[in-house]
Length: 392
Picture 1 (tube, rainbow, N blue to C red):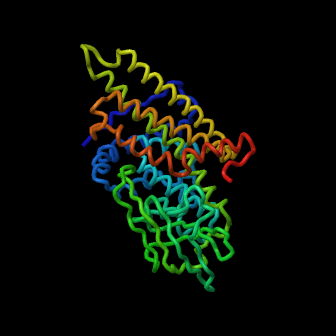
Picture 2: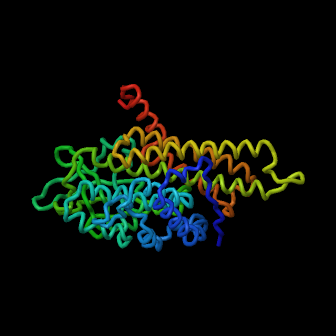
């Protein structure tokens, strides 16, 4: 099993902007990652196998819904703490961070934000502890960037509704005990429904043959005349505001998580450059390699500063969806570039499972697309600065 040799990198002393609690949380999660996740992650990715046993462990370390109030089974922490946890997990693997952020931001959060008191009490504690796994159903086979066109729908049948349709590219789906699904009622208005494993007509087949997020489990959600009790409909929101609010929380976590990927690639390349000798000296002594490393840590530092500021705004309730989009887009693009350059620095070794870089590169091909594609986030920023809508 691989040994996780990662060392902390903080070029602009951002630790001075963090509280002691932030650093304690980071150190605790990092310790778990190094001991429990890093040693198995390469084998899991090679075998396209999700390590299901870690779901309970993620609950134990507080990775599920850390920003949800403790009274409902969350961590009761601030948004910077949430970001730090996502960064430490994604430093190891984007797929595992997806498991955590889907659970916290896309399942627990909508139930907390839009659910009834009974729904909160029933679902959030078991999701927060990792006793239950959840998934989020918005994307459909023909409707990704345009969720308003969704075909999933339900009709009123008195004390219940009957749901039909399907969702695609759903993280956690095949193993999920709970699914927060977005569908249209008979008037075409979008509502959120909570589905449970075992409901008749509800299935979640796994999607196979992925080249990306191979240590994460992904599937479809299929609804064939599923009877959903009316008490399972989220009462606190209608329209696309519901799912989009959840996506903002998830995108915020991705912005932090992408820095973790970049840091791991940089750390790997820096160590390799110091140890690998060519022409009688370490390759770290050559100008072109120093250029790559200097540019990596510069871009990481810029992303850290941007994301820390976003965290402050999020804590103050001032962060806008457009700011979150900018941060997610910038940081994922930054991580992609650093992973690419780090792979080159390692030469042939960069494509092997002995090092994490190629796995990170493949994972980022999903991260750059989900929770809003790279281009969609660019248009969100464009609309925000111009006031002109380029989507229609």
